[in-house]
Amino acid sequence: MFSDIRARVPLEQAARDYGVRFGRGGMVHCPFHGADRHPSMKLYPNGFQCFTCGEHGDVIDLVAKLLGLPPVDAAKELNNRYGLGLTIGRAATPQERRKQRQAAEQRRKKQALTQALDAWETRAWVTLSSYYRILSSWREQYAPQTPDDLTKLDPRFLEAVHKQDYIGCCLDQLNGDRAQKTAFFQTHRNEVNAIEQRMQRL
Image (cartoon, rainbow, N blue to C red; front, side, top):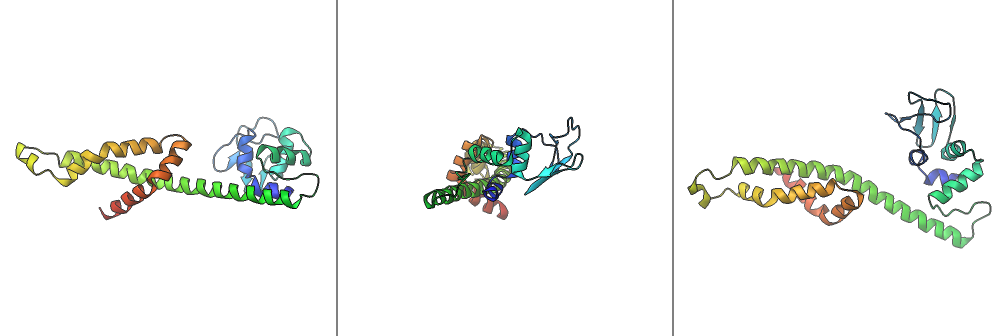
């Protein structure tokens, strides 16, 4: 059961959720030896280590020490807080194990979607920002200068006029909250990918 909790609850997430103050470069302010003016604790994927007071352990140890709980109670706390659905204190029944596997699979899919969204969001922001700047340049550079120009408008000027405000709205959605970004990812992913491919040819 402890190994399941260690595998399912990221140490960094638990540290943030339980109020540990973060510094830079993966270092945090150790909460175990009084005023820690400079971050002295390092978080690793599977454990923590304070280089000042020597405290160390895994995610269960961290929560146990923060809340003053025995390890088994800290495990229960993590199980409840993160909805792991683990059976603590007795062997799980086949039905409970099946539910645990289903819950784990749902978490895995959610995490995969989150990771895909984070990676795509950065690319999308760079792509749309670059495209917006190009459209702005085209709108100015290829704008008609004389009445005769109105009869033969440059296609790049027309594209800028038609697309710049729309791309600005897309950037606003990418700059919104998590729900807006997720919705934009689901509805505009192919369009942004197509713009990215076109940008590579410009």
